[in-house]
Image 1: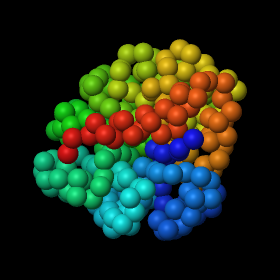
Image 2: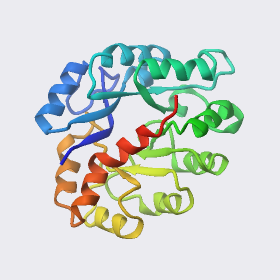
Image 3: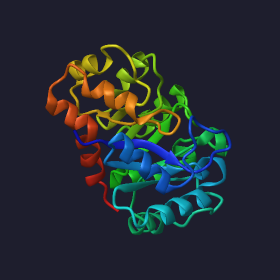
Length: 249
């Protein structure tokens, strides 16, 4: 089984995770040890320092590593901290960055049409995925409000907890066809089987939350889930490959 992790970071955070992964080389070593082939990654400085600093650190780090795809961070642009959207998306293309994140609480803004309408409209048109984290910067009310305004947004809900947040994310899966959930910490007995039975495997993405969670937990859960091999392959890598292949920069 090929694993393509949608939710991993590196760099030294302000608050240390289980085992700090300071550089991209350390990240690749850990991926090799666990058997993770590829990863969609971000740099912790995108959250802890500033998006501009962290985005550049990420771009510099991954430029020679074809196994890694970048995920940058954006802010509302009324203060002119980023280039125009077309120029920014060209920079993403050049840096091999195919997805974006937001951290509204840490960066002091609201992720909605008033503050970020221009960004989000462009992301919808270009099918650029937005990754939102319940651990960093978004709560369920924020996510529900954002999707009500941008129902066609490709949105990946990450870090939703180990006890199962099905009552929160299942309504989103039913209403919004471009919503996906990652598997990080979804260590729920029978959880993967129930989701695949109810929604198919297409809306699930393997994600570890590494290094705050280990790669192996969800790899083991997925390998031994009582679902067809085709579904396992889609969750492990195929769904993310399809999503990133649809991005138009």
